[in-house]
Image 1 (cartoon, rainbow, N blue to C red):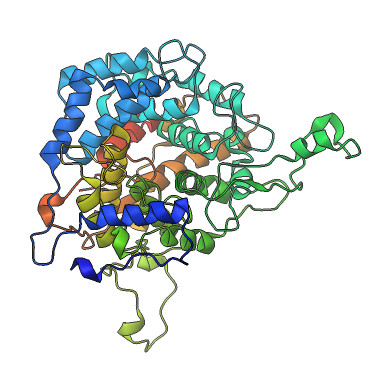
Image 2: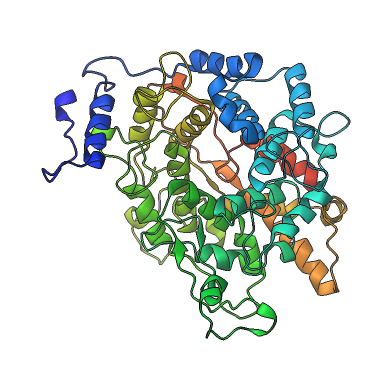
Length: 509
């Protein structure tokens, strides 16, 4: 009942922030179904028509500000179709491939629009869109991606501290690092020289709250203002210098940093730093921050992106989807191979054993679905930040992806990883290498080959946990599961990975 939802307490001293919070709660409260009414239906057809209008008729005038984000508009639309289970016709796929290839920069990577500079973020959006509409062969787009130049573009952005600029003459941002790592993984262009220093830099971006900010402050910036500071010969980077985080923890940065950290696990385990200091993050603090971002009942369990900010539908994915990644880092819910686990002591009661079919999610999955279904759906189609805001392509995808993360538990499986590893063809993987990286010794070649194999098996090991699907409003509200690391359906990510690594992994089904 509506009266059971209590507003956020205040101290009686009104501010613009507290006033806006109250107004938001009042707006959300109006969308809470009265007790006894039918559960809210996911208006799939209305959302499909919203996406189709954007695709066929073009985006409204207010999207002119997104001129440098054209691959993103394409990706948001196409992945929205995929989450809702909508297939695409051959003509749409062909036209999309042609549009994306026109945005490929001659020096590598993809630009946000024709004639613009290459940038890490639209490169990610373009490659993910290729995963949805593309295929191998003539006209399919995949073979037209100049992976060698993409790799060279990535290396040209690398900084001495392990970070990357988002573009030439641009800034450092963990969102760019995530986009780079996701693309490099999908296209089989990961190398040790590309990844060296990245984990150490990411670890410096974790704030005292537990979440991540966009970057950390480089030591050389202090040195420029300190005329008496001792400088290293040649201006080399000092990894022991303090690196205070820049800004506060934020949902988008936190997802990108966490997903990057998960993608980097094979590299971290295979190639420890030369100085012996293995980088680490505080996963428990990270988990605490993520779960504390989920709103109260009056906010219908939506997620906010920063402490003391308003809930927003897009953080259903950026934070809700991040919780699953953190659970994985903590070993919660992962499908472990019991044959490799340490034997249980004799006589231990069954009650103390782990149940494989227990939903031990650490955020309220049903509440998040209720926020998206009740507050996130726009009556005219599409999904939104919160009422009374309009729907847009960005929120339509990330609300639907968040709904997917709340409905399905997609976790790494030891059994799946072993099966993928057993089917690994090293010669085919080496032949499909898209870089110009030259190994200087047999040991370097072995490390590169092992990195490829472990990375491929790692990202292919994610499976939907059986028996834990939760559908508020019934199975009719079901959307497709997405890969937590790429925000692509398993079908699309598997196909692109298998092709670019030259592998034939065992079927998931």
